[in-house]
Length: 531
Image 1 (tube, rainbow, N blue to C red):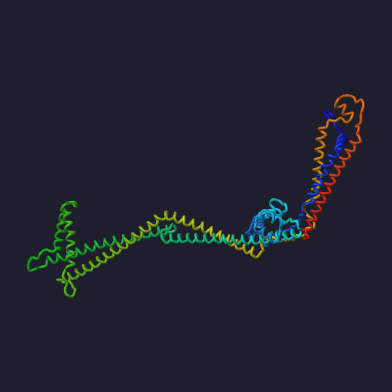
Image 2 (cartoon, one colour; image 1 turned 120 degrees about the vertical axis):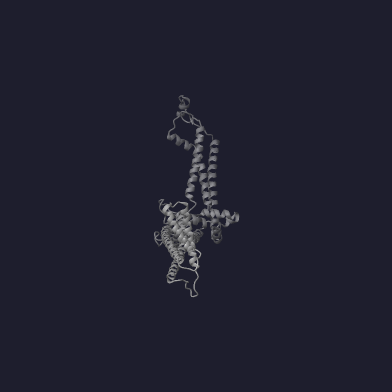
């Protein structure tokens, strides 16, 4: 290109015409090569089936399904199972797929090739919406095989969805059943511990504190009543003791004044009467804290005991009647005997009340101990009750979950839950899906044309030849005196003609050879399919 020259569109057209063979040859070569390559590629047919998602027949708000999640998530899980090597190898062997590849490549490579030929597509919807259907497709060089394999894959998706839902529902029910059994076992153990605690601490529990306090109050009242009764009986015993002493003393004094043949020895009763008389005389002139007065009082107590002992040891007649010298003594002895009998009864009553009081005191102490132990037992009982309520709530929750899981499993077993159904069976494709030969040839031609323009542009950029008067003026800034045209000799014209013919012939030969090769390839493929 000439520096400083401003090129016009007609200049570029002149350049293209001047370099026309550089543009034509890459165009023809690339177009022919692309055509041959596209003709050698085998036709690939695609057959697809449409599977619709049937919603559950029972409302979801009434029975929760065992399998949840979006359709895409479930399809991904089913696809992983169906596209496993075991499944695909079985299909390859069944339909005799990829015979040439199996002879030349490893089975793992063939399985990967089949995975690439299988397509699972869902329509595009909103994020929060589930598409109501999806398609399963398969590509093959044979349209009949493509249709058969697509049908098999679609049926596998339907069956795998049904079996997978049943397996998952059963597994969910079994898992919840095991958890329910474990929760029931723990609940029963907690119930046993709670029952044992209540048996061991019966009467000591916090809910029995009020009854224990009431029993303590009742026991105290009964103890007070027994104490009052004992006090009354002891006062009565003192009165009886004094009465007996007086009776015995009176009888002794009377006996002492009776005429006898000689002086008899002084009895305890007589001595008691004498001491009492002496005490009365001393109290007239002495105070009660005087040593002689206290000594006399102690002596009176001792003599009263002796008088009582002598009265018990008086001799009886053979008929059981006390010997008395006169009727007055006999009556006095009867009164004393009656008083002693009453004294003994009072003593026995007091002993019985004391035993009863000891028993009541033990009961009161036991009730008091129960009340004192209630706070500590309340903490233990609260802990046991919290554990029991927690386990009971867990068991009830698992029981409801198990019932829901059983209902969901029944739905899957009766096939009234969500299902896949083939609404469009795969059809035998009439036209190949690939390769797109028109597009490939167009791309090849554009690539050749682009390469030709690139080469022509590079040559023009490096070419500084002056081809017109304007070029001379721009490049040299000199006026043109004369223009001398190019003079071609006959030999040069002939050489240029041969070069052009050679280029045209080469391009034509390449095109013919490529077309023939593509035709032979097609015929060979057709013969293979027919056989």
